[in-house]
Image (tube, rainbow, N blue to C red; front, side, top):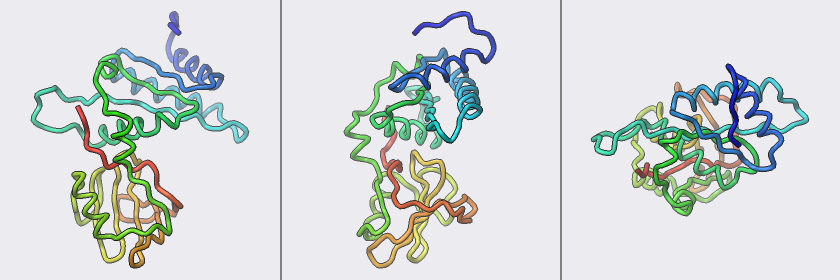
Length: 212
């Protein structure tokens, strides 16, 4: 749809209402990255304000621009890479919701769906995994071994515990091992404090390198 004549935040309200009525995801094409950010804040406000326990919460994903030029000799920020990978991973599974993207970002090529699927980290409690193999997997995909995990793309090993901040995740994850079996998956703060957010499985952690 091509809408006109909106003032203030009325555009975001209209998009939120349209998304609730739609039986499929909707894509909102914005003029630039700042408009993507502002619209996301407004849409999430209206969806949260009108959300009730009887209606499922609608997901809102933004697909950010790389914010780098083709010949820059540095990589995009890890948070940008993480958000792009999360959106790409969720898109095939998205039954309803909103995806925000700018015109310039829409014109860029993307990796095949199979590439994202094959480079996704899927774990669950009780899974047979060798910690050494998991560590090698992270290193092969460009993750950095550190003493304390703070940023996306970092991991740390202490005894039978592996901390990792996967691409596409909004928080780091602590994985407990007993021999070659995962016995616990739990989110924690970047200061190392557990937040009590326990998981039976992890399905949105991305191992993929950024692809221009």
